Image (cartoon, rainbow, N blue to C red; front, side, top):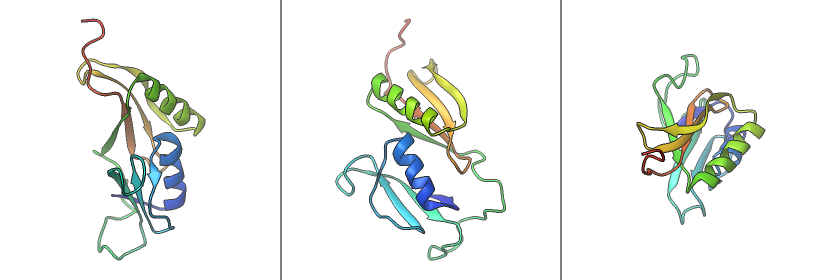
Length: 131
């Protein structure tokens, strides 16, 4: 679960850039799924900083995201290209452009979401394309 100041705006970003599907709605809390809500796995929850029904979830006064990265696997290179175009259209700050990661054995790109969290979108594990 990510704590955010704007649940609706963050939800829209994850729908556009990562392709997640909202399943709850609201300005305080959201569930995001990999496809049909409740028929596919829930991949992410968003919670507004000042909504306190879950107790202490951190503080917006402390820099967020340090040491945290969220990884989202897409089906293939075409899906990665589609997500890359969506990230660029959304104006997501780019940390790394699409490229082969030889340590992870997949293609990936890295951006930050509107809250400063690091987001990696990647293809499934595959053999080294040059090996």
